[in-house]
Image (cartoon, rainbow, N blue to C red; front, side, top):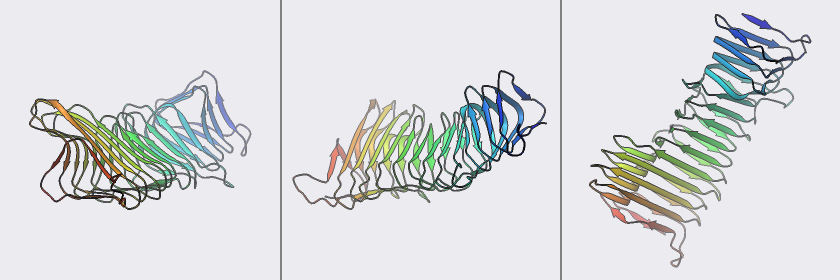
Length: 360
């Protein structure tokens, strides 16, 4: 074990700078300071664990790189900012508690090939939280709230799944794929995006809400066997006030159904006064079907906003390619102007089993 205390005593400052790496192949590296810890222009490597404890902030600067199987960081009076290209696997705890209203933000970035697993996260009230896992991000089994501050979660080329309710001002969730099974509440803007897999809003407990800001959802599923879908909504997606909802889904596949956007039978998309835009593109190859947008649920604007659904389907061979499939539920707005219809369907529309009510 290597243990370093504050250079200037109990209330001092501990800093590390230079080209000399600190390594601990057979034990824990523990750095403690009565003041703050600043990691600058050096390298920390341990096969086991790294413990950082400071009465002030813990800050990573310059070209510092941290490699550790386990990380524990506690800043009793400041921020935790480990936002460089680190290689971390397990984060046992991230505890940032402010003093006199200062500090409490948390930022951790890891490019490790096994994904980043956060077991315990405690940030200050109304402080930003930014977690980046280059090959996946596993959240703690607890609610995360940043109050009036922003929450950013990125899982890189791995999947992202909620383990509890999320809340904050502006919220950004992104990753290769995503599964949301809890409440996500943003007072400002809310963005959910996948790059190589389904963006799924579950049917049990999933409520996606933004205040007066914009709510955007974008899902892209890559080429693969089996059913493919860009965005699937089985829960509630809603924007309050004048907030608008924009959903975009793109899917490519072969051997089964390929759908850009699905609004399931338990799915609801609604706004108060903001517009709803749903754009789906499905491309199928071989003996498979493609659909742009399939809606079995309810899409509604209670106030003066409009609804626009655009579907594009195509592919090589396949049994059917349908732009928009309406299989039940309702499409409704509060607009009554016959010159400017509240509901616009762009693409060929196919109505299948189920009564579809379009009210505008």
